[in-house]
Image (cartoon, rainbow, N blue to C red; front, side):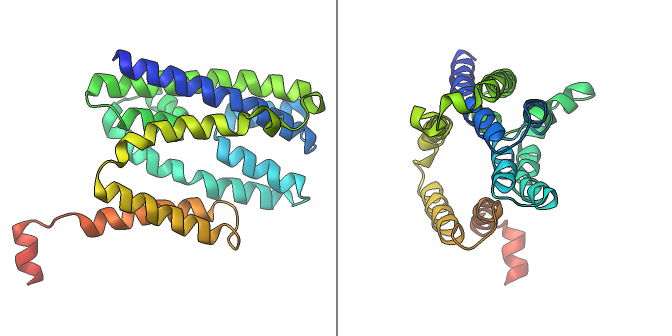
Length: 226
């Protein structure tokens, strides 16, 4: 439990700080402060939010911005399928869990060994990221151009570094290494030619395909195949 809480808090802090970058970039792209806050409060998906303002900054239409953001956010559906049976929540808690199901909360939750630690890791990470992400988004939006390029502060690397620290221990197994290598290769190949969001979905598809193909069949299934 303590380890899960510590992990969740550290990831929440690193990811929350990254909200400064989003807030500043969003305002610079021409999105108002209330609109920027609405994105963080309601959409609450960093990748989707950055994709949306990226299209807006490039002069794309609102339809293209929403479509790109939605495509990238589709990965959260996969996260929900993984997290839901682990949490076992009902009623309004299920709605709250759906809002808090993001990259970071899912990673911390599935990285725990005990059910209680899984739940603690999910809620601490999800609530922590939500509160800090929105607080720092507001700070970045209000500061706007005064911050200059947010990447100069290293904020664009903070969340990625925290997420990598969570994933790295899970790459000890050979299958996990193969999945990671294939996902990286597919993503790198698609980034120059595919619309935003497609490389991430393709990487997720690689992991699913490897999981399906590499899962040992039962004796009855092997007999049917023969």
